[in-house]
Image (cartoon, rainbow, N blue to C red):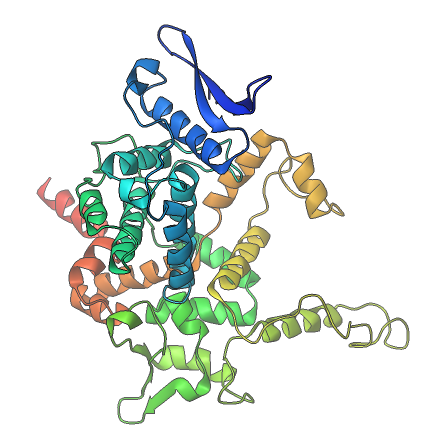
Length: 444
């Protein structure tokens, strides 16, 4: 990838500038950015580079564009971003906040010093072009985003200005104008397409099962039986389970789930097989304690180490005598979704060791191992891990596909808790291609 021109100070002056070269004529031109080191000059630098890249690195396309600072009165974009972020932290779920952080970071980087009233569709389109292009020079490097993710990020930026209009921080006309920007469509843009989430292959799942600790293995099996989201099962407590003696089916209604703010009721059903999995985690446990806890996994790990101990108890440390009173990190009382995901990744790595050049050698620390690998080897390692890992959200797709194939689309919709069968059909339940193959085999 061609090198990006640098932000620098003009010798003998206190002004910043950037020198751009026309990709066709090879003509060079200096663009003055304002006082060197000022936030406005750095923001203008990013904006000039973005417009130059969007124009195919042609200087003629920059003529008449907005490459100079503006001084209109009114709240700046960065001030609105700051207030919106403070409000969003108490409103949105952590997963949404993670995506929102990326969108607001980009908005502030390119247009933070701009008056909010001056932000329009043309500037939003330029920001979208940057999302498509990515920036390896950014810290941390920003890879090109996928088309669907870009559309959702643009929608989040629009909502910033809708919220600002509702709080009288920006004119409502700004949000109305931004709404005219059409979304990216498949096959009609150069944004990359994101991969579709597929069910976990049975061979991969069966190989990883023996390497999962008891609580994580139970969670995996429960997801396959109930089609629940990971975050819903992680909050399960004994007092949350309702036992119906007539139907012999247990029900669980999570207090918090994805559609709580839409006032949708979510019910998870535990049949006989799911009950056998949950029952051991309800015994000898307070009714208010979480069923699946990292404390259990840590104790299981220590018990396994003790079982293979070769040093007699009369020699060396006895169990529990060498533990720190205040450790830097200690297991929590419940799993969170990221920790659940990491536990599955660790099990996948134990089940599928990378090839010799990429594998971690015996006695090698993780830092030394990472330092030893070349950039090409790191990319090969990431490709290997992508092919030999899965994440917990894929298990919901496994359950949905099975329910659709065995019991039909309506059963899958009701079990997954979807308000519409279209979501179940389009996103979660993979169609059974075996039926089509059998039909075509008969009709030729």
